[in-house]
Length: 172
Image 1 (spheres, rainbow, N blue to C red):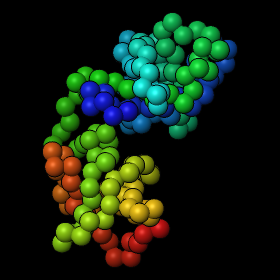
Image 2 (image 1 turned 90 degrees about the vertical axis):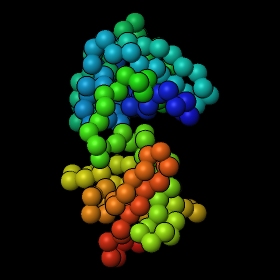
Image 3 (image 1 turned 180 degrees about the horizontal axis):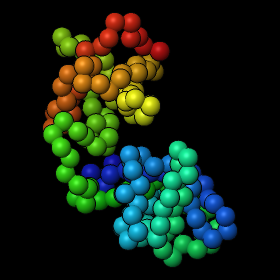
């Protein structure tokens, strides 16, 4: 979703049981963004938005289960499979300097130290020790470890990131 007022925090991947509980792929480090009473928006690719309030959420392996108030039938829950979950950006807590929301990074132009353009930050994923930035250009992908020794500069306003690639890091 391209609306800058909202931040993507998860995607509905399925249902659980008969009572309208959703399976969720969270894009957050913790489930605090799905705390009871939290207002969410569900959005699908056509631009349709629906407002919901969180009833409860709990982790289930790398995924989570999510119950939304007023959603208590499996049939209605199945209609939301594939939808994205969003929160208003203004409701997010301020981060410490040098830390960023993924939403602020994805889409940035990525350059090597020295100025060569590498591509655009297409996505981010977690590993056991650090995040990995997926830089894409012309059908190729470069996996860049999100380490202070590799990512030398981030300018959110200019939508630009600079990286000092370790020796041997290559396009796939």
